[in-house]
Image (tube, rainbow, N blue to C red; front, top):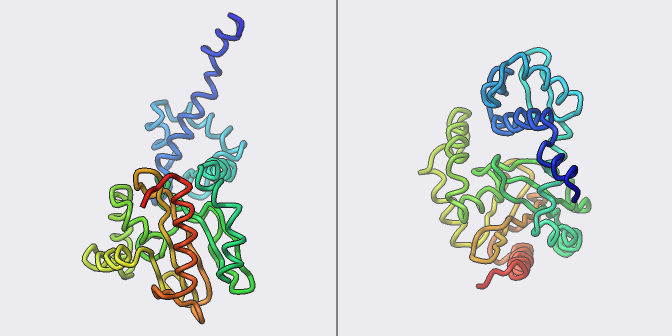
Length: 264
């Protein structure tokens, strides 16, 4: 590297760095309901609202942000969401498991997905829709509820510290919408059952016509790396411990865990 190149690397492009402060603000407030206004983003980025507005105009044009013309509130744009999904897909587990989903789905005759944890909760990062069984509504990039999905129950069971903050919000939301479980007292038996079984299961949890099972995938040290899940029509989808679907999914998850360095 020449002296000139080294100097340029130190200088960087200030406007890009300023824009990234606002993009970071959008990420920080991504879960806000309603979405943040300009003054909130400007305060987080430590800049005057007028200056923040100029940069937000460019972020919107670039697809990194979206502005609701009715409310003047902002959220992450399509390009930013796509970047996030691509970044998640670079995780080792995703590269390892992604190419196998089609084979697993054909073997068990159900749609199969892979979820990992993010600061917004469990997100589906890879999916093979086994259309012979059922076309599932779940899609890549979808965040799964912690309390009402088989995937969420696995995270609640084996990643308690990670889910704690979001779990409290979700239970409060459930209570407001009169959805069960709406408290730890109602959720705890589901978590205990998940741990005992070694996998999560729901029967019509998010959709009355869909059953789901989810198996934990661990990495070296026993930390939960992600979740391998199967979804299919409630008619004929056995989620009990003796089910061939459950057995195969657990076997596949155990294989992935072993390849990630997890020792039983």
